Image (cartoon, rainbow, N blue to C red; front, side, top):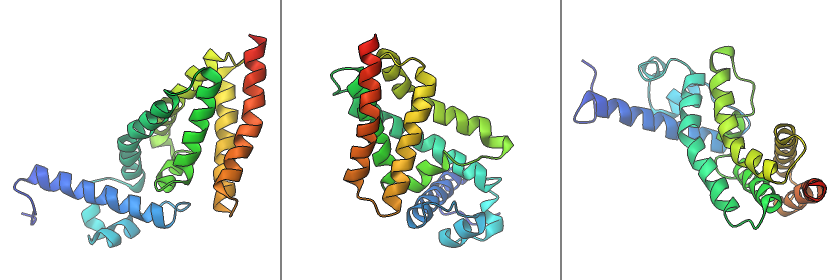
Length: 195
């Protein structure tokens, strides 16, 4: 019987999974562009690598669990920011700003795993999380109305990812934020004017 540090085995398991999640968050905070290996995660959590397999089957599963846990909070923060927008154009711009904040903020490493290339066995899950996060932007773009909200969402989020990479390279956040707005706003206003 393994040693447990909670009243029940189920509580111990939940505690260990929370520890693994927090360890991954910390590792990604330290190195946001490098998803950690299971060996790194185990070492930082103070577990033997073989012990990690009692809680997850792979690093990808652990990252996916953490993404699925975090994504609703990220989506809610975007939706909350968009709630103050006076119209769909402002809503889309607010979404892009909130997304940029996420991509350069404390959880940037985890958020960026979402745009990584996922193995076949987790790709559909990653795509579902990503689609759910993009839904508020697509809704705003449909209200603009952008000619093709799906394509527009892809292009505009690509712009935001590029801005986040520029911040990583040393560009000031405010400058990158202004560039996103300078490119996105005329497109959105033109689309709104054609409606």
